[in-house]
Length: 307
Image (spheres, rainbow, N blue to C red):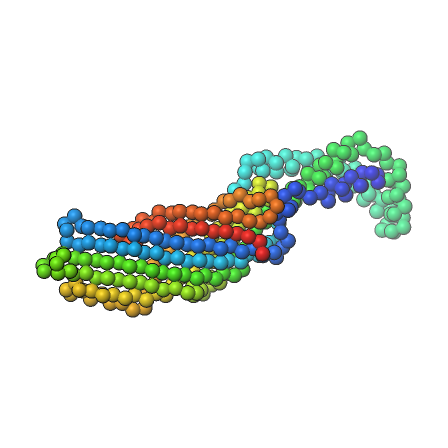
């Protein structure tokens, strides 16, 4: 009996090999993400009535701090793989089998409690006598292994991290030239509008977005990877627009404005992790469709580390 109990205790205390990249609940990690939208080009209309030149760069750097939740046996962000589903079904069968094998002993214990009428001294003696008279089952090792497997079902494979704070900085520089050819406007008599948009500094935080705008990530300690939902660039971003024009009848004016919204990556990012610690980085490039200065390339560079 003592040998059997020792096996059970040893098995239920086993820890998975993935524990080294799992953190204590409440641990902190930091993610830095740089969003850079760039667009540059020239355009001359087929009718030869207008010419455009532009050079646009919008940069937002977002820093988000996350807190770890308690590790869980199942993931919230990871896709459930077929192997895991098969393991779960096999585990259910093994749990049922093990429960059936232990049922006679459980029944005997309940009978002892009933016979002793909850007298602790009586229960202690009867249980001791029961254990001394009981031979170690031939399948004790298999039973212990089944209990160990049950423990793995409640293991710590996945850990979700939620955003608890977010800050951002930005830098906007846009230069756009539009030249028209109509009536008296020629290359000799230039009719052109020049627009310069600039802004930068600490980005204001819209109401409700100080906690990361729903950004989170989840670690899979078994496969050594993570699924990350990147934070959305903080908006709005104040800018100053300056306009100079020689186009007849052009009423465009400058003043205080806001940068155009970023195209945000709304798809989760998957990345591998080292075996010993929480760290990952990556780069994403996304073509952005749009006419002239509205189309370009968005580059997202990110890096994650434990604090």
